[in-house]
Length: 126
Image (tube, rainbow, N blue to C red; front, side, top):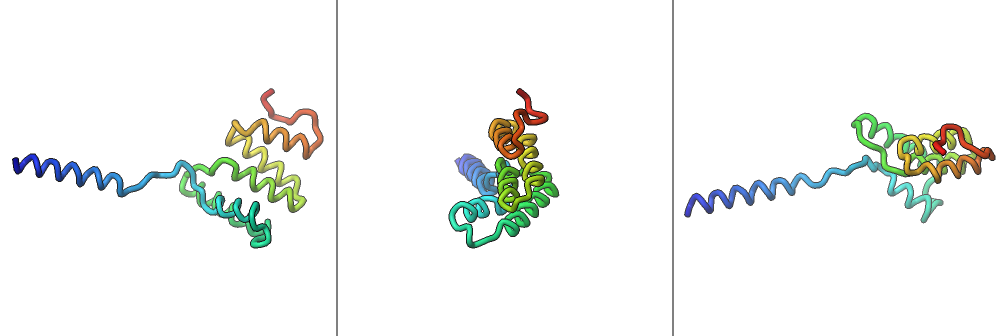
């Protein structure tokens, strides 16, 4: 009977230790959620240049850890650059978003088409 309690206690300890490590995130989020909130809710609290600097720093950190950048981050950077009239950099980020997350192809193609005025976007799978 003593062995059963010992075995049960050991199993409970191991199961609780497994829960203590917590879930691993699929993406390296960094400041992306906070920056998106600021852009959409209180844009006066930060400038697009500050947001771009923070998000690019987060991308470098994610690359250093070999972690994935969350979906939408490159598109967000593209929009910030577009707001600063830096169209070429915005196009680069929109194309990067489309490359890394193919499910965003339709939206990115529409944005690029609207920006460039082209009828087709180079590299698009149609």
